[in-house]
Image (spheres, rainbow, N blue to C red):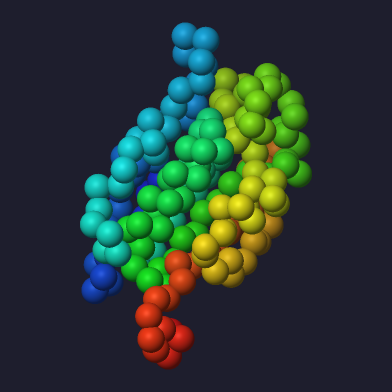
Length: 166
């Protein structure tokens, strides 16, 4: 299985498919407004119900507004098959950089040239509506250290006998 920055998608049949381009770039202040993650704002170039899993390491905590994050999570739901997993990591409001630097609203703070959308527990719960939330796992990364959550949620199975297929 390949690992790259950004999303990892395993297609049906176990064939891995990586799409590092969807990861975007670190958000930076350009021309007075936050930009970055433009690739994360576009529809995923995949058919509905065509993948078993999606992994996004820190993609959702880029300088995306909550409604953009909600739309991206909806797009992930669209491409996942019923029972498919969405695993993502985000920095959270317990992180040392939360509240530091320049505030841009919507829990987005710019520090050291990077803007980060910090996640509250309430935002995780809101994004999990309509999903089966399996786990919110806290961990640390890097020298600061950064405080992150790894969230695992599944698209609900649909139709008769869905529980037996798991």
